[in-house]
Amino acid sequence: MTDDPTAPRPPAPAARTDDTQADDSGDPELEPAIEGESLELGAEDDEALEDDEDGPDPLAGPVPEPPPPHDEKEPEPVPPVLWESEADHLDPTAPVPRDHPPEIDPDKLDPDALKVVNRLLQYGHQAYLVGGCVRDLLAGRTPKDFDVATSAVPSEVRGIFRNCRLIGRRFRLAHVYFKGGKIVEVSTFRANPTELELATDAGEGEEKDDLLISDDNVFGTAEQDARRRDFTINGLFYDVAEGRVIDFVGGLRDLRLREVRTIGDAQVRMREDPIRILRAVRFACRLDFDIESRTYAAMEGAVEDIPRCAPPRLLEDTFRILRGGVSAGGLYLLSALDALRFLLPPMDAWLKERGPDGAALLRAHAERLDARVRSGAVLEDSVLLATLLLPLLRSPPPPVPRPAAEPPPGDDSGASPRTGGEEAGPSVPPAIEDLLQELVRTARLPRRIAERCRMILLAQATLSGQRRRRGGLASFRRHPLFQEALTVFELSVEATGEHREALEAWRSGGAPAPATGGPPQEGGRRRRRRRRRGPRPGPPSGEGT
Image 1: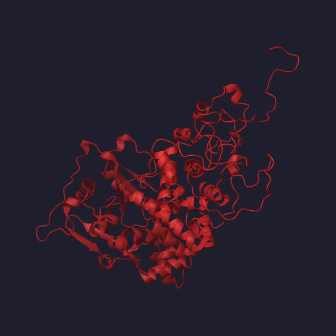
Image 2: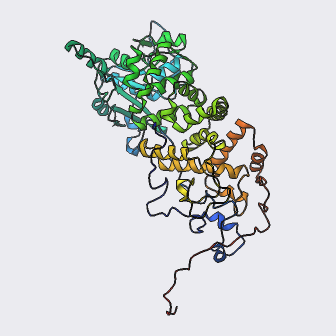
């Protein structure tokens, strides 16, 4: 996440250890075992063979393991002792008011969240369901999770629940763990530190220029907690005991108007935390709401402050847009706000160069990705990212003019960082390589995700039949990334209508015919050329064996 797509790359590529040689092309010991299975020559002869006519296989290197399932709430494994047990005796019932029907159907409330609320009330604390769960229930949607806000401070929450631990530094939270892997997040009522500082400065006759929030652990009342939140639709509380929605900020009105509106001064709220630009985009797209005019104007004015946010937070909220099945609308709004130049610089540059045709191609891919996510498919982050970067690979900017002749073996111009100077075969545009490396370096994108994304992009030429593989295309089925690469290929075919025959061939258990003339893909023996090799290590001359 940087506004400089030409930032220097780390010396070591992703998913490689420091003692791994960069140039592993053609080395049988570094290629997957499946490649050796499809060769007809002996292992000793194979060591002396040159790579196939399309160049060294860019997918022959080690494949990183897939990342663990993503959990936005819990960054670390939970010890088994923390999960709820029968000994906890937590009450999951929702009281029914005598004088009026509850404003939210009790049957739609989460039993585990009710356990948390009821136990906090038993200990004399205020406790409400809060935020997105209240918003979604009132909007007729099913909440993804249920959060609780309380007057109890984090240490008190920890003392009340055995199945609980505290997390976070900037924003201290309690997580209460239940059977089935469910987590109920409990936050203490907080005041807006910016408002408190502004009030203090006003009394002293001073004005604060920098509104960016760096600490958010100032405790307050329920009303202060509602007013410190970002948007009115997220500032609603639900009192389970009374069966009433508590609205300090006009959230019920904006739900009826179907608008995303900041709480308080829009310019101040966006400058406090520019991440709210991405959140407003996500909520507007997910709920199909409009963004209120003053809120949108404040978002435009705060775009320049995006680089001040912590890169990991920017990365996470960008991925939330992709994981939420709203990437098409989200990318459109972020592009209109000119925010992509800070979030995904290569995509921003590509869109500005390609104009409406590029925007239409990207939107087609994003819409197919969104449809797949909304159908219930759980796609790993490398697949999400590769699907949206694929249009940049399909029609990259015009290459730098080069001589018609093949470059000499030592020429590394234009080669991807991972191939260590190899020239032949498909490659990822340098801007995408730079983006992946920069996300790893500054935004803490796991190297395994970056490397898997890069390999998925490179695999598209193999799936379309545009690149031949030693041993035949069908051997690619046994590649560890075949299913992920095929998913991206399917989405691309659905978006563009191209390579349908190749896709049907893969789906039917076969492989597509090569896109250009050449030796057969399966059966028959491919002519192989011996490559020049240095002398094998051996005993000094004059010594016997």
